[in-house]
Length: 239
Length: 241
Image (cartoon, rainbow over all chains, first blue to last red; front, top):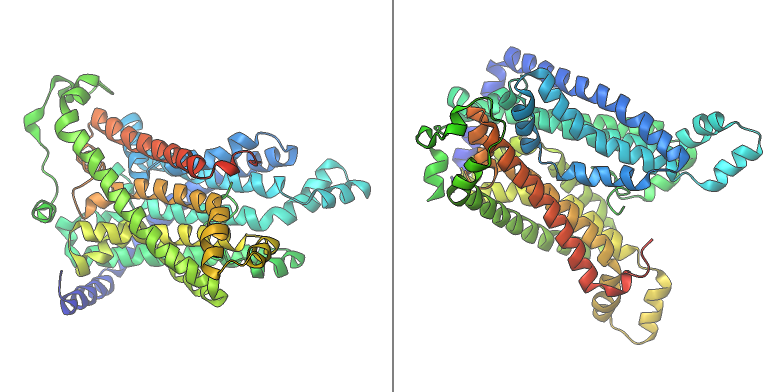
């Protein structure tokens, strides 16, 4: 156990490190965000259309729901290391590992969200003469958006956290400093850790705000009773 | 003890054990290495990993359970608890482990505190959801039978909350097994240790063996929890959706 005064000093040193290395940290933050953005972009293109389509058809529930359980069982360090073993090192290979981690929560949430849209609402829309495409775009998607965004939020935070491990596989991120204690010492490691934590929290709050913004007004009253404000959505957890 | 090892800087590759398969760059995976190194590398790491997980899930369950019972009685507690545990859940694991180092050093305690903090949100939310999901009529019936509040909790509410509690336990356990590999940056225990060593040497056999063990451990633990749940709540088997 280290005395608290010493711990305090460690954090003061860490703040000094951040102040002295703003440009380095900024550059690594951009690398971190580039890795996150690229992986999330591709993962979104893969997961959302598939999840929405399967949910619209109410098909493939077993696969769509279980993929998130299997995805969660994949340890990020193990996945990146298996990626290194199979694909070698570099930006693209880390990106592939991050995509594999990001797809399951988004796919499952998109499926559950569309599949779970009130059947009466869909029937009413059909009764009004809407085509299947109109039903999907004007009824199912708006009602499902909050839950779809919850999945995106889970995935973003997960990807930001895992991108920290990128330097182990030859790509750059804020993790460069954290895993290189020999060069940067404890103040540097702590400083970078603070930056990563802030980055994840900002992303979480940003996407929580986005999720609230896309929630249709009619659903907001219900949402308020929900205690699940932060973190992964409750719905995929009891599935 | 372990602290002495952990404090020494980056792991020095153990060149002494270079088998034929380690020198051959083309070999993706060879069983002979796994067989030769099971007893002194993989098995101890696997056991340490299981111990790390059991301690974290055990302590996490106790804390989350107490918090959920408190929030079940006093509803206003739920939101602040979700905000605080959600905050802990959001901090990336590699960062959280390091942020604890000034307080608890490069020890197993540091690893466990971080791992426990990741179980709290999931377990708390699921236990509370399970308890508050008990229909009001069921509660009324139990009270009408003359049950005290304590009997109501233990004989009615908790058994009915079991599916939700176990769903939370499964996610928490799998999450901890996954994150415990990252603990290698503060303490050289668990499957993260062989993974990290192998990463530095880009030795694919050890990477695949240790990584595969970790995935297998997660799947086995998940399946075990499903079996336990079925064994202790036989009534829920027939009403599965």
